Image 1 (cartoon, rainbow, N blue to C red):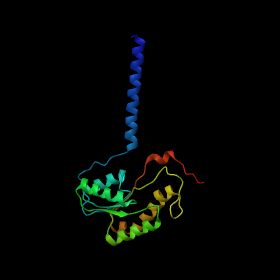
Image 2 (image 1 turned 180 degrees about the vertical axis):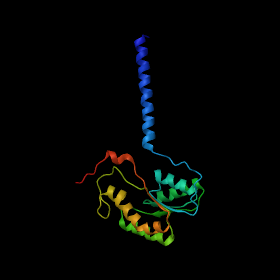
Image 3 (image 1 turned 90 degrees about the vertical axis):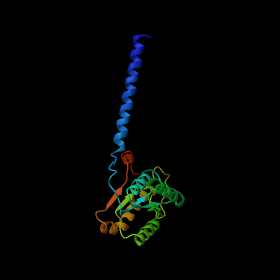
Image 4 (image 1 turned 30 degrees about the vertical axis):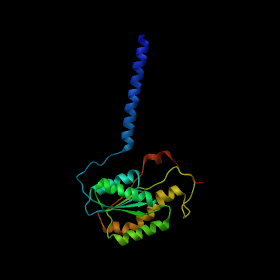
Length: 191
């Protein structure tokens, strides 16, 4: 082979390696920080996680249950919620994991969830607003909100306000709103 061919191959390999390194660094940046303090326990703490049957919500439920928290999984789909609850119990070894129906596209469902929770528990240490929808066809909640803003924002706003008294009573409590960098790539269509 000629020297120019070897130079081209070497240059191409260099560019590919540089791209791999840049993609890895971009992945680490977008991923954000990771909580690695395994020694922190949640014994006696009560947690609600919305959308806990999949993704970040389920992984959070597993981790918090492993730490000893009593976890309430608020999910729309009963079958998937119950399957996820059993998986969380199996992976965490904590039997204090509960599925409760919660449809954030329904103000009535949110009010029922909050009222039932207050009848069961006298404290709430962590409310993790995690559930969300994205890239869905244009549709509306049963209360007339555009689905994405209704579920991702209005539903969690109502839920948080209905549980705020318990959160304050259980201080120092936490409200965690899960989001992503995807908002930087979108825009609100007001039509």
